[in-house]
Length: 261
Ligand code: FAD
Image (cartoon, rainbow, N blue to C red; front, side, top):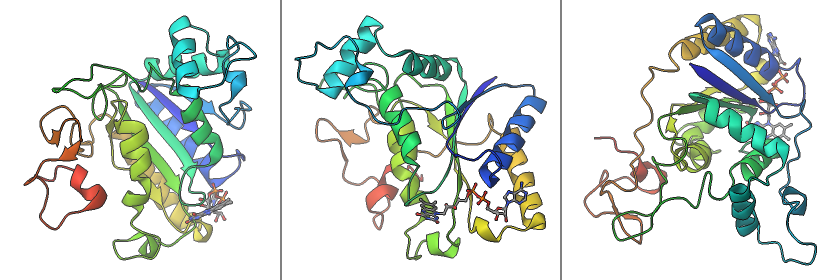
């Protein structure tokens, strides 16, 4: 199978760099073909702006979604964006790897999403009617592919637990897992998260490496998070609200969108 790992750390000799190498080596040992988008090494441009749309006339007002859609349709996106889109189409599984910075992904990775997920490619696709609301949340260009996060944090695991002050880690990662990955169709696997990494000693590192190898071995068999699909009756169209009676009576917020049944 083909695996794309998108790596967002500025230092190859970091913990993240070491974990990336372990993940890539294990995937190759399993017989997979692996490509890495190393965003800092590539000098990835993180902001989406006018330069992304060379065909846009100088005096035209920039509407990012519209310009993105037109450039995608015309094959006029910049070469760096087209190359990442091709890698995504090639991949059977995509891994986003990053240190948690200010409770989310580093800006360079967010910029990769902003620029690579063009209108007409990753969003703005599919029929909108009283039966369907586009190809999204379980449908879309990446349907049939898997994705997961590898994340390191400075904070304690307890600080990211159900009652922890930072908020549960699955909630913090929900906009990435559900928004960035499930929205354009990926089956999303539980994240691989390592907490309090500044305290990691050699024994701790060895244990983490073992767990990471196991996750790479089961990349194509691990059960995805059972997010509710949009066009399969759970949501009212067009309000997209979960229908009454669905979800645990006590559940609210993000938890409602996971089908625990
Ligand atoms: P490194 O600093 O490279 O390594 C961490 C430790 O891992 C080392 O000290 C060492 O003990 C061990 N190690 C590294 N490499 C190896 C190896 N090859 N073998 C054995 N042991 C090794 N944290 C939060 O929890 N929440 C936040 O919101 C948050 N925001 C941040 C914002 C910014 C801008 C920054 C800079 C940091 C933030 N942090 C936050 C902390 C951040 O998540 C951690 O610094 C990051 O996850 C560490 O990953 P690293 O790859 O840089 O680790």
